[in-house]
Length: 255
Ligand SMILES: NC(=O)c1ccc[n+]([C@@H]2O[C@H](COP(=O)([O-])OP(=O)(O)OC[C@H]3O[C@@H](n4cnc5c(N)ncnc54)[C@H](O)[C@@H]3O)[C@@H](O)[C@H]2O)c1
Image 1 (spheres, protein in one colour):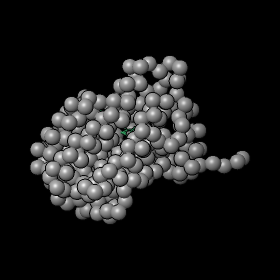
Image 2 (cartoon, protein in one colour):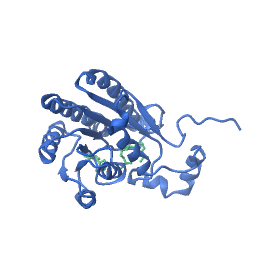
Image 3 (cartoon, helix red, strand yellow):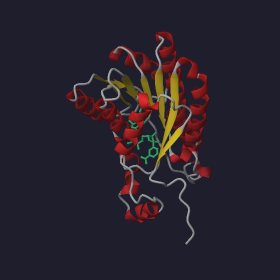
Image 4 (cartoon, helix red, strand yellow):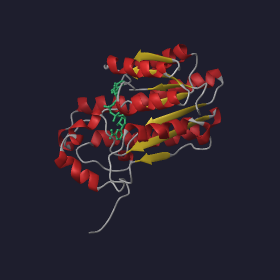
């Protein structure tokens, strides 16, 4: 086990990729705070599976789209597990709309959760580590859309592109505190966020054609990389994005 004695806060771990990361980190020995916004049942399920593995776990409700809530989440997580070592900024939302129809309200709501949340969660977490004199890991779940345009999802691309530069900047600023900062950029992963896509063969078939490895990713594909980045095997990795997409991002061919 690579994370024995470590504690992780995983935002949005009531389902999907966040849930898989919480379970994988627990499998590797970590205690985990399971955070959710509205799906209490999913969070309790994640928590109970972690406890069955014999690890410490706590469920904490918080809307990471609100800065005060994010600060409270870090404070309560550190208290619940008696310390924190790993922050996974996973919680995220997406909303489809042509650029000309994006409302200020939808734009702001998306940026609040996908970018402002991770920014202030990272700030509170780094302050906690600095005060405690302990090293740590920040792992952001961004997307291939931190690089790749996605028409009709402009605010989402803005948020993930922002997460890329936030990660690069914090990697430098926080290195002297012994904190590494990295992104994971998933491609198409089978989770509730894209249920509409997965259940429509007309949408799924062209997407599969663009994935050289020929399959949609599973949450566990991302979770294993997150556990690695949290482990001592990744001691010398900071300021990097690891793409987990079956080859989607850089796929190009001529017929
Ligand atoms: N599924 C994919 O294909 C894919 C691809 C690239 C990136 N991602 C990213 O992975 C992350 C997880 O997405 P997923 O696919 O598991 O989707 P999901 O919809 O299953 O999970 C999103 C999670 O975020 C949480 N969340 C949403 N708003 C929140 C808030 N205000 N406060 C706290 N938690 C909140 C939800 O409770 C949920 O647990 C997101 O950041 C998403 O952008 C997903």
